Length: 556
Image (cartoon, rainbow, N blue to C red; front, side, top):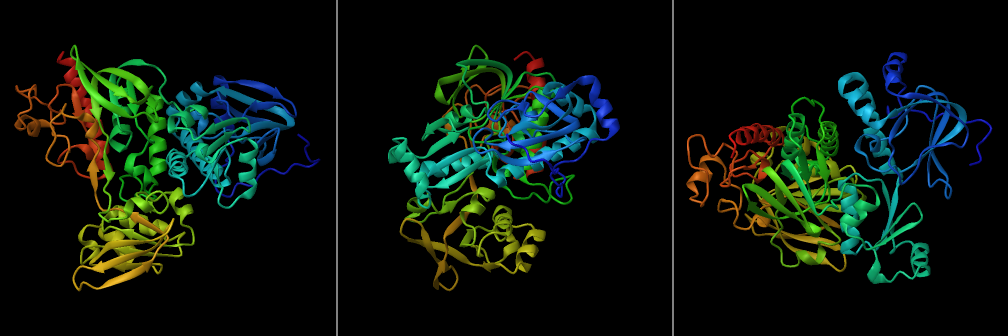
């Protein structure tokens, strides 16, 4: 690269680039090596794992996107600062390149050593983790990383964009409906409309309408590739319950594996802010909570496989075999099912017509960007709907909250209802239900009806967000485990009363969270009778691990 004569260090208004103190550098020093660096040396490269943590002792290092092609300098950092972002802790590939801009010296610490060190130094660990979380958010906002090129009206374009957003992967979206240059580029590469969307990574890897697993492998996520795997504990579902189980299972010596078909965080991961979770008085985003928990579980040795969909459960020689999408199998001594729930769809005749382009079941930055400056409606009267309305009101032109009940506080926390009632850009419509959707390729309006007066009204809307309850994700279990009439998993005494053949039926069994199959446990929202709160799910995940130990010690 050609460097200007005078380099200016990037300012740090958000706390993304703190400086390490002398004491912190001294604590790191025994775990790494001092290394001389010269201008244009590459410390880590875009598209490759970053296996070392670099603290700058002298000189300057630039982070560059598209190194060797676009050479977009994202930041310049001097003595005392450290490099990298979440990928150093998670093992993902780098989304930018670290290039030496001025001769100097760095302290290079192996990533594994860093993980162990920060686990024992709370101040240092929190400093690094907080900076890395902010940097990941900044990379997402800058549109660094891979490119997704496709039509906004394509179901597969939305699938890939949602997968990237839910996994907080830096990327840039290029809409073929608006970018004629991109259209010409694809034609020059002989890409047909049927082969879109296209993912371009590092300017050299081109994926034509890839599956989520193919995209995950291309960018270094841990999509499963082995045909057979064995473990002590398999956790299916990486929401709050599954993440808690992973932390406690791995930290207590069980070889632990976690599967999720979309991303860590579950439904909680789609929440813009969780304000009633213990220990976070100012709230925490679901994405940050999930990332912190996944890093914590990984520190203890838990292995994550995302995306990986559980397709079936079978019993074999006292163990449990779970079949995974793309043909893999996992043999486990004990199993915790924490698959959670999936949002219920609205009973409107032409819903499927608009689902690919205008209907959403989550409210993250991805969805907010899709409806920026547009009028929208949010359907639902619970906490999820309330949180979505508040978050989306920061981006949409206006938000109308359609609530079937006659009062907002019937199913919503009072603090949340009060905040919504005071918000100037949210209009609350009580006793209101959706009857019809209008538009061509994209939603244009919603026809709603007052369920007391019968009066109908047409509401302008370019997007509709649906939060009207949920259904358990248990169809993949077939008839292997006893379920209640709504499809939730029965545990403890309820499993005994189900009369399911093979249910443990002696003193103390089944355990409180044990299902009708010995050694298979359920935790979180998927369990019949559970309390649908993040803190409750975390508690059940931890409790399930304690019961797994009891089961294994009993020699079952």
